[in-house]
Length: 54
Length: 225
Image 1 (cartoon, each protein chain N blue to C red):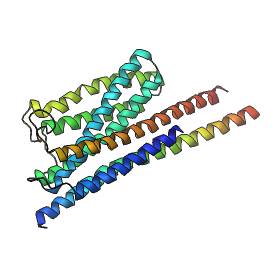
Image 2 (image 1 turned 135 degrees about the horizontal axis):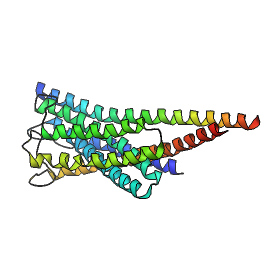
Image 3 (image 1 turned 180 degrees about the vertical axis):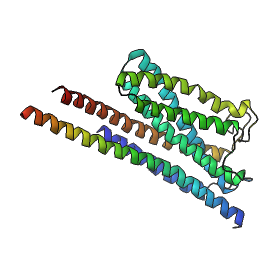
Image 4 (image 1 turned 90 degrees about the vertical axis):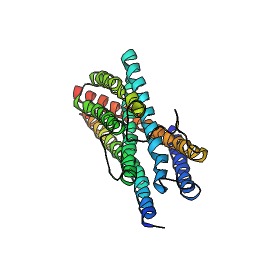
């Protein structure tokens, strides 16, 4: 394989990695939002239960 | 049950994409002029198609919200916009990597590239606008308007390579463009799983939006005590 072809493959790999990386980053933001919503929900439910008790 | 179906669909899409990558690297021959880097088109173009499909759904959701005032359309609008932006980013970045090899530059202020960037920034502005408005119905109304206005750029992005002289390659799937049947099959074969991934992401994001509304309702009742 000559230099140009090797460079071509190298950049193809960068392209594929970038496409997957964008997807992975978005999925991670979804996971982090899911955790935040769950924590908020639990804390509000606890707060409401406490208020009902008092 | 619904979540299991979604995750199953996502896993199937990833398996299909992985299989396609293997097929693309092993079975498909290099393009005569561009060599191996040509294969980026099998992600670059489906990512653009998926991005525009998401923006089209966001437009429909925006119009539907303004007609019905039902917040489920707002949830669909924000979900498709977010997912569309992710695929738009993949499209722009893979295009830049291809351009570095073929044109020798990362970026040029060509009609297609510039209009796509403006389109991406407009939809990014939609998300910024949503963060700035607290009141849910006002946020949904303005987001719907913003989504409808932003979509006006999409046909311009799509047809810019026909309307103007551009450095960006001419269309290969319509008009006078021609593509080898093997390449064409791979391109559409990749679009199917990418679209499946987009559907899963939109569905998950919509579920989050519904839960967020439940949290907001709980917060209001907590303050009402």
